[in-house]
Length: 448
Image 1 (tube, helix red, strand yellow):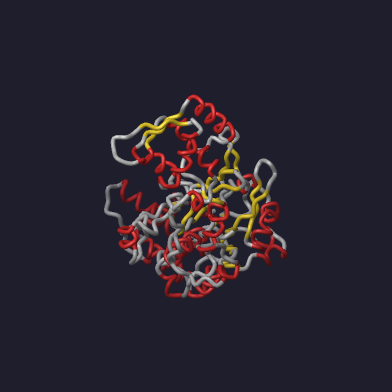
Image 2 (cartoon, one colour):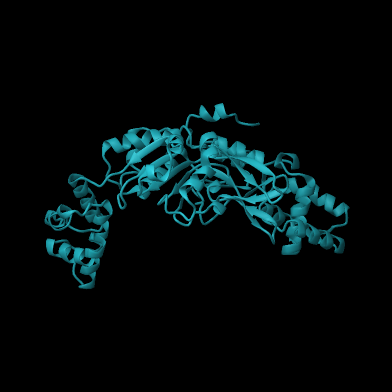
């Protein structure tokens, strides 16, 4: 079954995307007999003698799926089978014969990947459409909680909400230190609340090329649900052992991936492991179903023009192409809310043609005094410190009225400096005008 773009566009924002179901047969796994046989040979070659149960768990496939490949390998005299201590095939011990070791070495030379079996590319594409970022239910009240730690004016919510619903690109711009990155992360938090967790595969296979997707350094596993799900029917499914989730998929929170000045064009292509002969998905691909934030846009190693030219097609058509070493290309979804955040003038970075492709532009300006005082007060509360309006008066008299543009981040930085001064002197953490004067003096270079 394949989901159409229209079905994706009409999605109602169900907070629980449908989970991939456990395959009941080799055919349902989407993998060929030869492919799984090679994986079994490589696994036993690398890990030594294994019992059937452990083989299935290592490949994240039910034993009934690998039963036929194991029988084929036995008939071909590539593995030998010894009875286990328990009743049933899952306790049998599987080891390589001499011929099997030779075949395993040949398989390792072709591809040395071992671990969870990949899913077919088609299954990955279908799952992406099930859990797209487009169409999440979003309304003013729903934004309050994930943005509760930020001090924003009502008109800012009116800009952010439609951008989230569209699932399209967003340009957030304005002077530094005023919460652009924090806002992008809050959007990710909202998407996790409103859109539910998503499923991503450990890896997928396209034309015999294995591409790993799950990255524990970027993806946060959602362990709040069992493998049978967390809805009202979970208990029934567990008792009947039906409808279990395909273990080749990982349930994760919608990713919020942030990249900054280190971004270059090579990071947007498949990374090939020439020794192991498999690929790792590019960084933006791992953000599918979530948020991809390009922070400090315009300060990357690659020029803005080259970077944006690379993304003209994905932004317009919501798909990208991955190219393997042979030169063959595969079309893949570009299903993410991509956010460009910059301190620079957008018109100085990109031309009008590209700006038209970025659907939403959100300007964040320096806070007015009333907003500044609210941010200052919120940081005092966070640090367990009394609010003293005289400290704010000092900052405006000494710095902001003399040309220094206030930043939202000043509140955090200065109050944390006051906190450090108090702790150094073994005093209760508190705030006075004099302490603020002392803190700002040590922070003076930043105020120039």
